[in-house]
Amino acid sequence: MFNDDFSSKLLSEAVNQFAKLPGIGKKTALRLVLHLLNQDIEQVENFGQSIIKLKKEIKICRKCNNLSDNDLCDICADPRRDNSVVCIVENIKDIIAIEKTMQFKGVYHVLGGLISPLDGIAPSDLTISSLENRLKNENIKEVVFALNTTMEGETTCFYLFKKLKEYNVEISSIARGVGFGDELEYTDEMTLGRAIANRVKYQS
Image 1 (tube, rainbow, N blue to C red):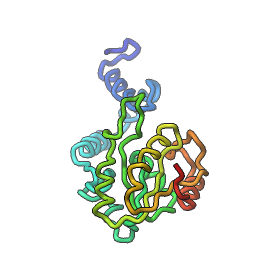
Image 2 (cartoon, helix red, strand yellow):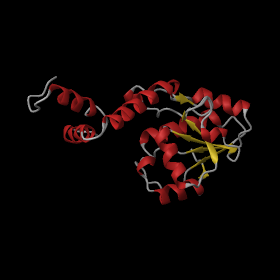
Image 3 (cartoon, rainbow, N blue to C red):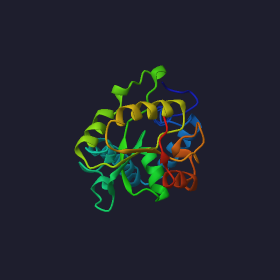
């Protein structure tokens, strides 16, 4: 809806679109729009096209559910990675956080969320079945729980432990350098790196 504070309806609509992004308020949205207006048309077109191309062409890795340019993401396709160790994370942001530490040499599995009955998220809404298929069909020796240390994260870990303990794999969890209630993407690299490197056997 047009905001009378702006002299231009086009400006108002652009600000409203940017303000829909998470963590972006109206003031920040206005600053971003004004920044784009100050750029050359070619730069703005490149910006817009990159977003459209991303939306149209981005793929989900058929193995781990990471975002990818190809059917297999660069991590799964890397022969230097240890495919026998699978780190279970909530989302892509957690993979980015762990990769920044340079302490994990295995591969990942993205659940796509955490079990949360209050939010209507059940185990069937996550990629748990494809994780079990990996355990059945791949030579996996260790599964690492690297989920946020929140109530939802702990609930998901406990559920996964009960589901996966029938498979012949070691089940571990990141060390408690990450405090309860912390989210991995906001944990500093050194703390997260130590937590993943010094992972411990999961205790239910």
